[in-house]
Length: 401
Figure 1 (spheres, rainbow, N blue to C red):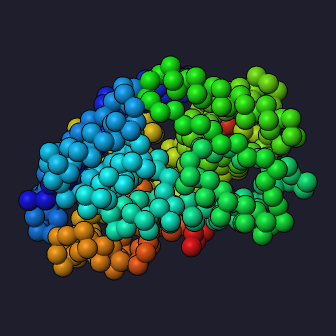
Figure 2: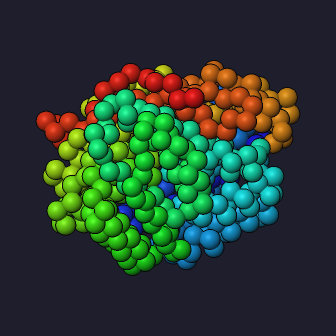
Figure 3: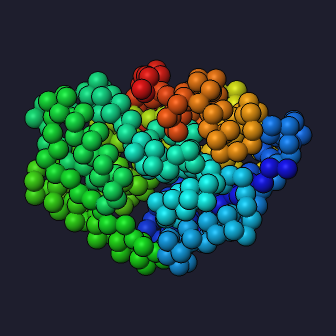
């Protein structure tokens, strides 16, 4: 038997935070039923490495306590109370603390959702952290390159960037974004690092977001910033754009899949997204269902599993999380089925051998090999269409080295 730990947000708690700041279209709830449905399917089709799989669920409440205390509790549950083989993490806790704690206990963890690792951090935690369908921040050079290719940077553009006040995001800014802009003859005029709230309480989140967004807008307006890049949050469509609109500030936005442009589309005031451009690798984040380029066979299989289990996936963000759960499990199965032994080292060696063979239900294509812990291997250009008031893919798949 292979035992997995599944960390998931308690029903409604994350929705409550976003709802409290007025964000529409983020209803998710826990994904424990989706994990169980996929595990039941996998067990009925040979298990993983010929063994049955069971999941132990630990529910965090992102509106109670601190993110650090939640991370410590998850880690203790998965490494001390129950010694799981691997942890499936939804990202509702302190990412840096939880990933480090699990790695110290030599427990692999798979991060499927809004995670922000870079290669340096993945190397530090190796071989214990995987982000199978995502693009780590060290590879966001393709974001800047494709924004340039799509004509996003107008002549004379004054560029600002908003990000979290986090060492990993700072490193991405200094070692990826700024050098790649320089390669195109561009530079950041201003950068605003938003403080990260230590707790998940609604009052703290609202106060932190509101203060930081308004400070960023004030600074950008005063410095004449007319192009805003974001590494910030899936709620940028309301947390930044709504106060920007009230202050008469309408820059041109350069986004990516970390920003959940489908949520921005649902929440941004009219005119804020005019001429916005994005670069995406996650269809359920990038565009609405009507603009989705079509499911891969694995996407179709995951949705078939959910339907057969009688699960209702209420909306696009819920689908994003459900497909992320399905991806984590099938990625682990694909690797363990070819592993020589069921150890973290055996898992790493199997991942190294995957190459481009793993088909994700979540992203367009993947590529794994030695030193590669994130899988997404291609992106597509996205533009906001004023006619439908929606984001559309405007390019085919572009390699993301």
